[in-house]
Amino acid sequence: MVSSEYERRIAARFATFDQDGNGWIDREDFSVAAKALLAEFGVTARSDKGQALYAGAEAFWQGMAGIADRDGDQRITREEFVTGAVKRLRDNPERFAEIARPFLHAALAVADGDGDGAATVEDTERVLRVLGVPGDTARATAAALDADGDGRVGEAEIVPALARYFTVPE
Ligand code: CA
Ligand code: CA
Image 1 (cartoon, protein in one colour):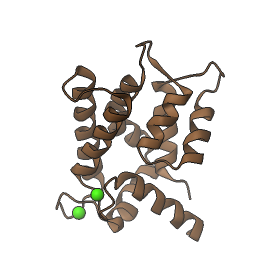
Image 2 (cartoon, helix red, strand yellow):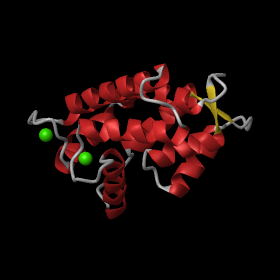
Image 3 (cartoon, helix red, strand yellow):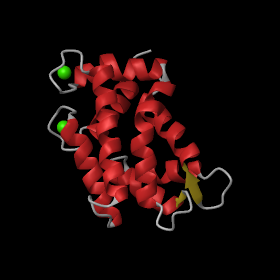
Image 4 (cartoon, protein in one colour):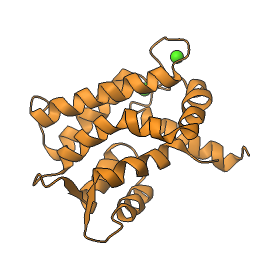
């Protein structure tokens, strides 16, 4: 069923990917996201974590372009996003996890200050906010991710959760 609520949620997901707000999703949006995350956590682009994040961002962009950029102009328009990305990712959430994982893995490493393989709930919320997830959703999502209540969020939890957020069930 196509509802105005559904359309509103699609528009919010598109806006999350369109980091620079110019009306289409392209490679630049992914490097803008990587740069913002590094700035938020005070990590340099030249560091191993910085390099991994930029490599993950490029892989994420290539994966999204492969799914959604039908005319091959290196831009994903809102129409391409709705007709390509949303439908295909909803049909195949594992595919989203696959293309997003290197970026999310690197983002978690940037947020994981003490290197124990998990980020705190607060830092997970910061990651989500920097990526443009609205404040209330970011807080609720970060808290929900910490299912066992130990205050920490690992990759095994964040990848499927973001896949659910971005694939938008109707
Ligand atoms: Ca853009
Ligand atoms: Ca296109």
